[in-house]
Image 1 (cartoon, rainbow, N blue to C red):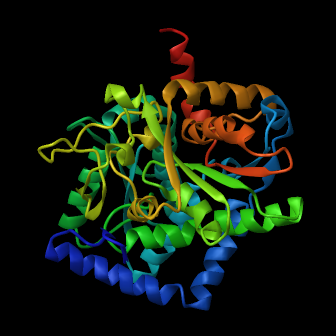
Image 2 (spheres, helix red, strand yellow):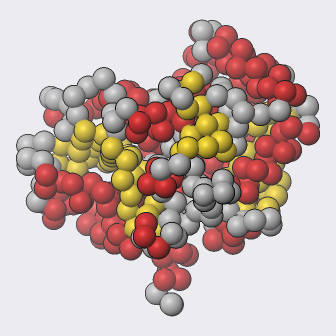
Length: 385
């Protein structure tokens, strides 16, 4: 599927053949009541859905603006939104008859979710992870291995999410019996559409919940954007409504420093990992290193549908620095007793920034995409510097 000029399938012919098998099986699966019923069964009985939409009263009072609601994806089994998609794609892999699933991961949450569902469904699992992320997310590495997955530390390049994806795609191309379970709304067709389908449960639930709790739609919704799965999952249910939608990338040490992970602010369109989208590249077309304190936002591109939504102006994409994300992490922890992932902390920081633009009778939904257990060492190490 193309999103305006974005998306597509920029891959070798032999990979196109495999992708088209997955695409056709996906189209058939989502029309199959048995498949959908099984997927919904696991979401409810295994993941624990629906996740709550929590009114953060203490944070709201502290800010003094619109009411802040948190979509609590951190309460899902494995602690993040990633398992919504992992279950869907793993069931699809079984439907196709593939027994070996591979995945990439940055923050580790997608890797843990994939290893978890592979253990559940009896599938072999291999997870590719940049060596930098292996070190800063070692707890998640230990979880994956405990669940039976093989974790491959990718040492080339910057040793972060981009390199993990590079390695996974190469392995996918070279091994016929492998299903690549991509965790974000990126990559060649049909992956952005599949991830959107399996993650839209976030927004569908949130829309019903806010109407029940507030009697009206929110004035704004906010989510962090690396590749963009948690955000497209929230945004999809609200795109046709009259409200503000904000996607928040990682500004790292500041956009002007060049040490950031904001592909949209770089404002260059190119091809990365089989898709046409906004990417971080220099004037010679070389991919620039992305940087964010958050491993899940440390990606030099953005999902093609996000690129399209930016181009048509439906979603406003902005960025938050490491410093502001860390402040939001600490503030939410102390005011609400909720420790957020650093990815989610970027969205929380942005909600804090915009809350006073709205009336106190208005509401803002923030997708709290994951819990912060995995980031505690990163935060604790800051105190030592």
